[in-house]
Length: 208
Image (cartoon, rainbow, N blue to C red):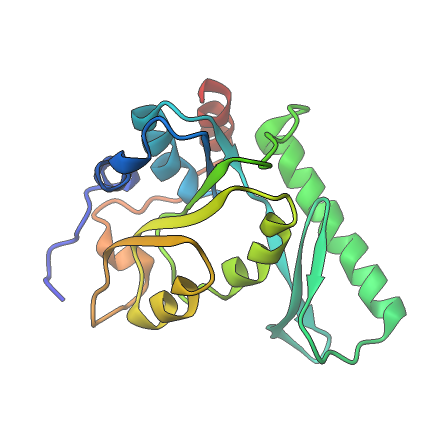
């Protein structure tokens, strides 16, 4: 990997990504950001393409004996479980309720009482500041499909080749600006990778 970071900050990454997504200008689309780091990137894309901006709040459900192992994922409205899971129903419902409370609290902080923008019959462009493994996003895609979008596109500034291989066949289009051989984490490719605060996300969503 070149020692120099690829992007000055998330805003610069979003501008570069917007250029790569120019072919989507004029589509019946929506830009969906993965908070919090994906929001400044997505805001630049939404602004450049004159598309609405929203967020996707989701979280994996970790196995009770190994929280790092995902047995499924959920949003504030939906849940998907991986095949072949033998889970205690009482634990699953309790864990689902706990995670959903967290997501709803986060949604209130970031969006207030503004409703989600419907995805039906839209081209959905999912954006993050980068992808490490893609597993959480992969688990979330079935819930997006249930809303019947026209197309699902994932667009990120940087991702490792392994994540690209996992995700490419799961969406209609995958756009990754850089797929470095030496991947030390998303933050390594930014000069400024300062944590994005809730207040910044809320302000970008309000203005978008």
